[in-house]
Image (tube, rainbow, N blue to C red; front, side):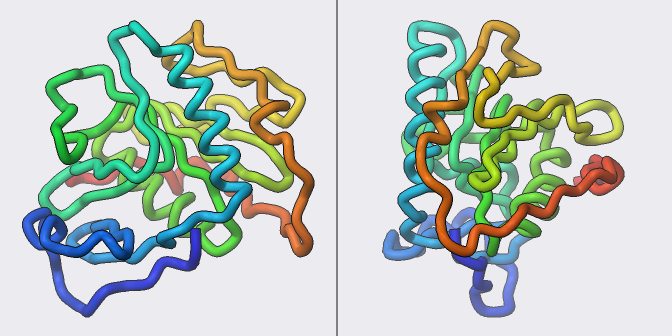
Length: 207
């Protein structure tokens, strides 16, 4: 996604958010409105589609259900996000217009311009509202990190590269070969991602 841009300096709520048009994607974090890219790049879409297909196949006919962006997730009246992928196991959370409350699992696909936003700000938000498992997908070099929530916040549970088979921490029977997910050439100018090793950055905060 492109570098997030902020709306006018004000605090917004779910009611405000519902009244905005569909020509641009927005997220609310602490009442602050942040504009997201209306059209992710082709590589982002390929990864999202491949992971979404794998999750759909795995969870079809089961209690939990996957969703793909753009699906609003209302964490609070001032916190509304659109993860790239998510899994909900409580059917009462699934509304006609959005997901009410924290999913069990959230996936975010990174881009160079959104590293700090997705890896720090949104990651801390997901920890605060109790998202149990969080995947961070880096397109280049291709790998996926899995973070698991404990009493102190997120801790990196595992990481998988292109030739690995991803194993979920929360769903032990969920296994995804990653070679088909990352089946595309690198793009010119690809930079190495920011890898944060300090787990204190992912601590739970009080609502």
